[in-house]
Amino acid sequence: VVPPGTVRYGAHLEPGVVLMPGYVNIGARVGSGTMVDTWATVGSCAQIGRECHLSGGVGIGGVLEPPGARPVIVEDGCFIGSRAIIVEGFHVEREAVIGAGVVLTASTKVIDVTGDEPVEITKRVPERSVVIPGTRMKKFPAGEFGVPCALIIGKRKESTDRKTSLNAALRDHGVAV
Image (cartoon, rainbow, N blue to C red; front, side, top):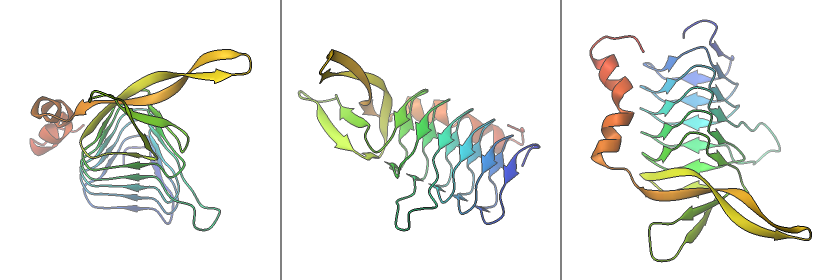
């Protein structure tokens, strides 16, 4: 934990977690080998897997109430880009890559645009998906406007793995990250 990084009593960090000046709230769990970068926050009861990277300024939402509310889950090996926000029980599956500035809420439409027709997904990002911010058109009484969505533009490739594993490579060679 790099000062002024803070881990609240009742949070659990497995051995090997690197917490830059960020914040992990009560009840949260962060898996081994994960990097919580500068000013990233992990909200109460959020579950972050092993070997993840939460880039600078990432906001992972928390949930203490109501009882039975779903926590945010980020599975093993995920890369979450700078200033991304993941809240309201959203589930990011294994090794997904969430681009900088993506906002994922319970009402965010995740649209897979890799096939002939767009496919909408709710409250989760499938494993190894590469996701970027997008806009979809929606009609309102005052007219049609673009509203935020998240676009799945492909699956994680070896070249993506190399880019997202830089921190792991530096740690393997004893370089502080």
